[in-house]
Image (cartoon, rainbow, N blue to C red; front, side, top):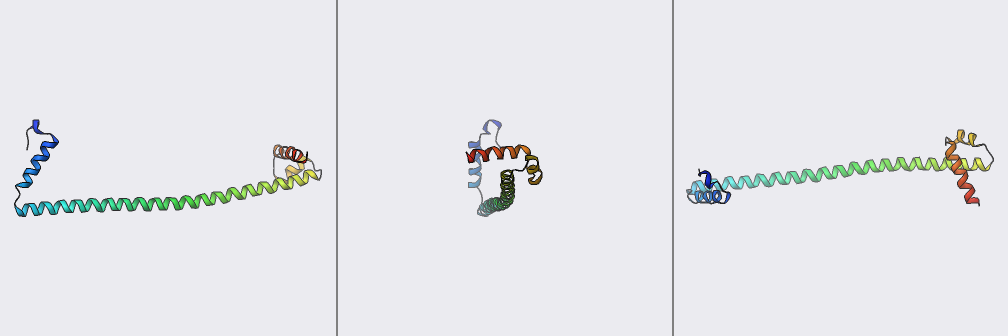
Length: 125
């Protein structure tokens, strides 16, 4: 519509407003109905996006919690088994068993048993 020199957003908006002022009642009603429909569609899309985000967040948190719980239980079980192995190894060492035999029976490494033996000596001292 406008010459290139007038392709400025504020001037374009003013021209658009003037065009709307010249609408007939029927054109104005049609235009306003279209604007209302567009606003309603935008709001529906925003609402759907917000709901999708909320549902995704809730699902992600649920899955994360489940995964965290499983991993926590697995870690706790492993730690509990390690502590039990260490208790058994400590008793075997206290009974005078050889480090290699203790390692064979408990599944702990010789280094772990040496560390355990040193910490037991420190507690006794």
